[in-house]
Image 1 (cartoon, rainbow, N blue to C red):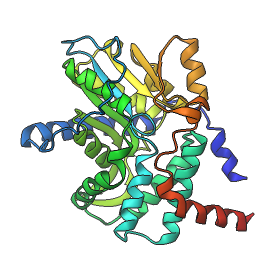
Image 2: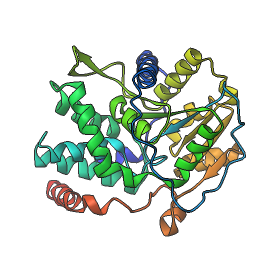
Image 3: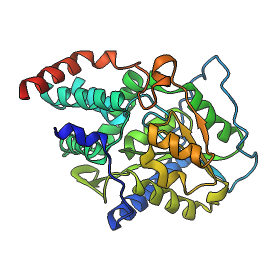
Image 4: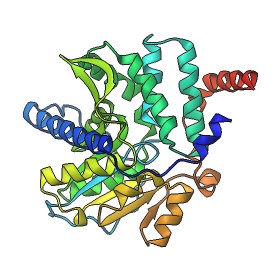
Length: 319
């Protein structure tokens, strides 16, 4: 019955660890963005946009350098959760055993079917990832992350959300991912999409080697809002002129910070909250899945079918 807890995520206010996680994410994002500018790491051009022209938003305002956009990653920019795709890539490279892959597959399938980001569920996945990368060099994981993006993530980017991000870039604004995924993974995705940078969960490293611990806590819920607040202060942004995009009610603290909140592929709670406040909504899911709010499109689940079936069988044996 423990799995039922995933269906009832608890609301949390910002804590000291949330603030620490947010400030660490903002600092890491600014350092990464500056490093990219200085060393011209953007060697790969942004991938071609989808041939079908997406709906254009009335916002952003061109030339407003005090405005920026903040995009949640999982199920907002990308179908599914980045941490699970990353785990699949690490399994392929023999970073861990099949039983851990089964665990990743089960968690990913549940996330996609339930459409819910429960803090304990997501942190369990990140704890697994931390134990896997402990002792590995940051540079090694960054290099592998580039390969994993091509293998598992590139084809799962929502064209509609990507077009919204591009609209901000075309208006001369900065665009940041804000995600509970590791900042290294988020930075790779942002770079490959041609975005400014990323705010993500910061894993502690000493002399370039992961210790297996986090700085603060996962960048989730209130911690995301703290990260956006810290980055805006450091970059001289006016949050009332900024936009934020997310699919999850867990990101209401972040969405409420800005003057232009958008609900993208929203879960049931966020859809209701957004409608009550006249926030803009966009849903890029199709057919029956789009109508059934909170259940993402099925693309990508097939790749996990083998692992998911094993997980289901294991779950049934344990009952």
